[in-house]
Structure formats: C-alpha cells, structure tokens
Image 1: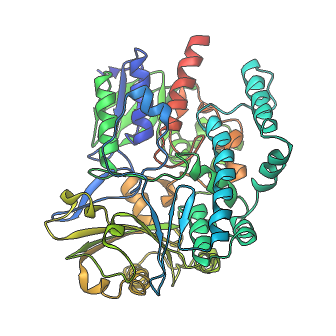
Image 2 (image 1 turned 135 degrees about the horizontal axis):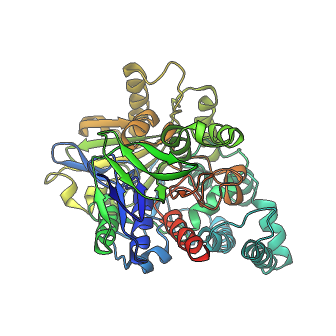
Amino acid sequence: MTDRYDAIVVGGGHNGLVCAALLAKAGKQVLVLEANDQVGGAAVTREFIDGFAVSACAHLLYQLQPSVRKDLKLSPKLAAENMTTVVLDEKGEHIRIRGNSVLGVSDADAESYRGFHKRMTRFADLLRTYLNKSPPRLGTHDRRDLSTLGRLAFDVRRLGKTQMREFLRLIGMNIHDEVNERFESSLLKGALSLDAVLGTHLGPRSPNTIMTYLYRLAGDHGRIASPTGGMGSISDELAHAAREAGVTIRTGMPVSRIVIANGRVSGVETESGERFDSMTVISNADPKRTIIDLVGARHVETGFTHRIHHLRMRGNAAKLHLALDELPTIDGLERKDYAERLLIAPDEHYVERAFNPAKYGESSPDPVLEITIPSFRDSKLAPPGKHVMSAVVQYAPYDRKGGWTDAARQQFESATIRTIERYAPDIAQRIIASELLTPADIEREFHITGGHWHHGELTLDQFLFVRPVCSAAQYRMPVDGLYLCGAGAHPGGGVSGAAGRNAARAILQREKAA
C-alpha cells in the first residue's frame, strides 16, 4: 500500500521548502522528499573537520525576497547585517563599499558611484517586480499573460524616455565597458566586475553581465548579511515553517523516478523502492535531472528534451573552506574588517584574465575570490580562539580538461592559497585543515547537474520568458501534474525563495481555474 498526498516536492532545498509550505498553508497535504540527511540543498551548514562548521555552498544572504519573508513570517537571525565589501589591495590601500558609498577612492569616483548605484538599483527594482511573478508566455492570447506583458511595457516606459533608453541599452551589455566608462579606481572596477560574474561561466567582457549584476541587486539593493549559524539556519527556519503548516519532510530519501501513467504524473518512487502517490509532483531538482533522469526522455516530446539537454549549466565556481588556528594578518585591515566581505579582484582586467583559462577547460592560476570569516562574529562555528574561512573561488570549470584528479585539485587549491598569500602572507601557517569543493563535488554533494549554483546560466536566452526553456517558463512541465520550483525555473538562483513561491502560486491558480 502506498501513501497518497495532494502534492509531493522532490528535493528539500530552500525553494522546495517555500513551495511546500505555501501549498500546505492553502490546505494541501504535502510531502517533501530530500536525498540528503539534512534539508536545505546548497544552503546548509555542516562541519568539514571536527569543531569547524561552514556554510557548505551558498554562504551569504542577499536575495531572500520580502514577499517570502512576509508569507512565511520569517525572521532570520543575522550575525552580520549590511556587510561592507572590502576590496583588498596588496599594498594595504583597500577600498570599502557599502550601499551607495565607497571609501578609499577619489571624490570623482565616489560621486560617480553614487549615481551608478542609484541608476542600477532603480533598474533592479523594475526587475525585482517581475522576479516575484510568473513570467508571461510569449505568443499567447491568454488575458493574464497579455496583461503582464502590457504592464511590463508600461513599467519600462514609466522610467522616462532617457532612463528607458539607458535600461534597454544596458541590459545586454557587458560590465567591463560600463565600469571603464565611469570609474578610475582599479579596485572599484574589479569589485563590480566580480559581482557581475560571481557563480557564472562569464567574464566581465561577456554580454549579459550588466543583467547578472542587476539580478544580484534585485535582492536587497546589494545589502549582504551573514546568518547566525550559517546558511543552514535559513533552511532550518523554512523547514520549521513548512512543518508548522503541516508539511511532512523526510530526509535521506533520494527519489529514483517520477512515475508517469497515461501521460500524467501519478507519484514518485525512491531508491529504496518506496512509492508515494500524488497527481501533483513539484521538482526542486534542476531541469536536466528532472526531465532526463527522473521523468525519462520517452515521456516528453523530442524537441523539448533536446532543448533541456542543451541548457548551459556547467559550473565554474569552487568553494574553499579553511580551518585556521587564528586570524591571518592582512596589512591595512582593521580588526573589525575581518567581519566583512573581502574580495580579491584587483581590477577588471585581472577578472577577465582569470576567466580566460576556463574557456579552454582549465582552472585559473590566478583566481578571483569572495572571502568571509564567519566565525569572527559567530563564535560557535569554530573552537575558541580559532576561525573558519569560507571562499568562493573562480574560475574552476566543471568539465576541466583531464578531469578533477587529485593532482588537479591540489594544483588549484595551491594556486588559491598563493593568491590569498599576496594579501595575507601568513595564511599558509594558519591553516589547520582545508576542504575544496569543485563543481564536480558540488554536483555530487548537492545533486546539481554540472555543479552550477543557478541550475543554468543567467543569460537573456535562459531568463524570464524562456527559463528554463521556451514553453516551460511558468513552472508547468509538458507532463500533466509536473512542475518545476527550483533555481532552474524563473527567476533563477540565489537564496531568494522566489521560484518556490511563484511555483506554489502558479499551481494554486491553475487548480482554481480548473
């Protein structure tokens, strides 16, 4: 005998938990099946050596949508809020960016940055409005879709003629040209370039990097926080909200297939052979894993499978965790700055040069880094007097030439440590233990095809109306009863909850209309 539910969510990542909670609040009996032993997907906290805990993949909070917080009554505890970005300089002449201000640059650059930030946040606000809605279908006569398209056109026009032209000019541009036109400071240009390409297979000269920068700002205007207890505390709070709403969550339950009967979903089957029935299945897995692995190509139209197969979703960012016996020494850094976000991106050309080897399947010998030391403000993450360092490191291509052998991993980790040493000369002496997660490791640990955090590149041909692909941008897959709610759906990656919330609303609206 099998258990029957109104809806089954495959994967207990943050979007899956948001979707499940909202469906349960609407009166549905919902089951969440998570392959790993803890919920959260890539937003988890775990030890990588005894006594040292870290946010395993995602490590900063800057995109959680206000609508998600409101709907689920979330109030995350933050160890650090509105963090300053410190862009490191080898001579100790660091610059500091916070909100619309930047310190350590010329007056002209400071003024130019205020104007740049004001314009970009205005454009990001326009984008954010549509991140929290199901995107309209193109070529449809549906009244709601036409209304949303009309509203989008109206909102763009409402920017005013000058700003509208500027928005349309910028949206497909690269960040390199924009920062070079506006700023003199190499460190400022490097920082903005890094923010535009973080987690992507793009360099500053790549088209669409203005859009990826706007997507980052669409969270909270670039304000960055570090949750108490790491990112896992956000997932734990979401799981608590889901259980409070009546959701059943089962961990250590990898799903082996989504069961299709007579052209529609009828449930799921786990690797242990358990069967759970439902006429509605929502996948928090990425599009490729959902359609090709769990559903099976034979159940969908060939052209759709072809489009899913060709989604660009090869990860290019690694994660490095270091257990330190004490804080490293960084010239020019005040003690309080160790609590902030630290970047190694000396200039926009450095970021582009770091990307160049990845085009040919090679890791960067001089990578760019986003570094945090979360234990500085959250002492429970490390033993007394000791610290943990968490760094996003680019570029590390998933399909590295020759594969991620032990030698290749050691080579890239050594290159990363050497890069940090240029700013913190004693870092190697401080290291007790290390852990490097390449995109291949991220794929294996978090079940993300290609190890791509966003479940696919955020480019104009994989965004909004066509995310993940044309004809599947409104969460509903081409199998009756099957939906997508993860980062591969609109609007994309980042710990925002928008995809999960939008998917739940789309399911409830469809049931209401039926």
